[in-house]
Amino acid sequence: MSALVVDSSSWISYFDGGAGDSLIDDALAEGRVWLPPVVVAELLSGRMSSRQRREIESLLADLPLCALDFPHWVRVGLLRATLLAKGVSISTPDAHVAQCALDLGALLLSEDGIFGHVARLVPLRLVAPGSGPPDRSP
Image (cartoon, rainbow, N blue to C red):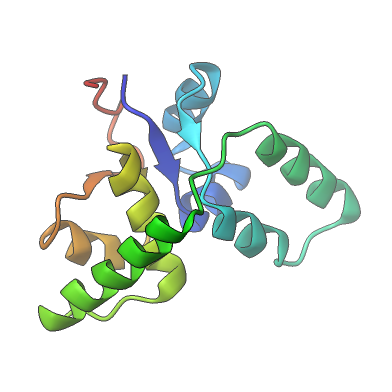
């Protein structure tokens, strides 16, 4: 079964009862969700009650983190450079999320349109919110 990397945009929808609920719930139950560390910072920086913050932090704390070693950050920089050479500008946090999915050979669940542009230029595998069960291939 494919690992699933969930971007901040889809986590936000998930916490609000959005379209990716069943995809995330299934992947969580199967232990297939991986967490880019920058997503933790993005999610916990939003406005919320102390209770909501504790619940989100508790859920995220149980997920495996994507690698953050030096070679990962080299690949993030190379991804940004490759995309820029092809006319697509991507932020470092978004490149980090995309590179996490690429490193794991994982599907990426996101509602952020930038990843569609990225997927047309590099082998990033996207799954759309509300599209049904994600690809379960290795």
